[in-house]
Length: 255
Image 1 (cartoon, rainbow, N blue to C red):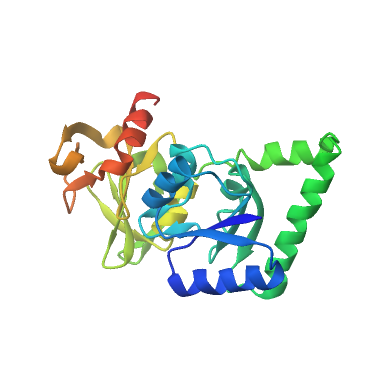
Image 2: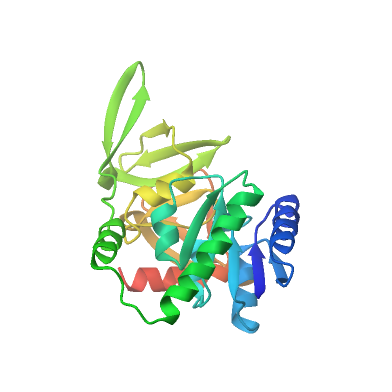
């Protein structure tokens, strides 16, 4: 069995590889990858493996961006420190969802589940109707309609539709409304991304999650990047790296 590990923490990737080969000596770790960009390249250019172990937060973004750029064929076992991406994970070839720090028995359970699934589907049995219904319900979570913020000794509800963008400043997540009011929120930006509609908000980079209605202009920039201008000012210049240009333009076009 050929396995790819997609994990940006090198020590964690090595530990995971050691656990896998201990449990399945016949397994071959064919690649260890740290970024979304590299994973897209590898899965596009190389024969896809039999199984992928994948972290969710990588060095240049969330792993779900990989699935938007390349067709991922093999099953995926997600290994992450966050528990709020489970729905997205099972929609993206996920067969198990392991929370860090994981132990040998967790890996063994995930590999055993893979074997059971292969055995089950090799008999060409149909999906249990109740399971199919449950998966459909899980795949359609309600987007968050508002965010609770605290400012000047008061709690205020900010409707999601009034938020121009979310951003990170000094390791704190902020939101800025269309009337240019800034508020801090408790959720990390990765969590916020899973709460708002993907059709309305786009993660430009690690610092910014932007509302479509806030985008004013898109310009070409140096090194095949894009420069995004919004209808209201931003603390920093908004740039999209060349590896995400096609994905972003596709999102704009299909809005």
